[in-house]
Image (cartoon, rainbow, N blue to C red; front, side, top):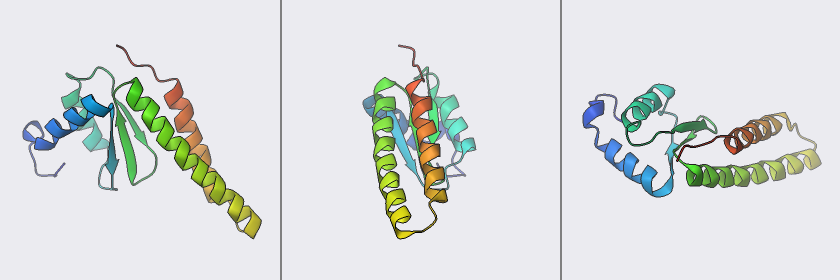
Length: 123
C-alpha cells in the first residue's frame, strides 16, 4: 500500500480481497510492510472475512491467512523452509561453524507451525 493512498480508495484492497477469497492466504514480500499496514488491511477486510491471521516468518516474508486451506498451505510452505534450515544446520555443523542463528530460525518457524495448527477458523 502506498503511504499517501487513501485506504478506503486503495485499489490493492480489491486485489487483496480477491486473492484471499481464491487462495485463502496472501504473501507479502518486503520489509516495507509493517503491522500498521496489516491492521489497516484487517479493518477493511473484516467485513468480508471473519478470521484474519497475520504471520511474520521474517522481516521480508509475511502471510495474511483467512481460512483453513490458506492456513494449511502456509504451514506446508513453512515446513519446506524448515527442511531447508535443518539441512543448512547439518551442513554448518559438519563444517564446524556456528549453528545458533539457524537454530533460532528453526525454533521460530516451528513455533509458527505449532500456532497455526491450533488456529481455528469459523465457517
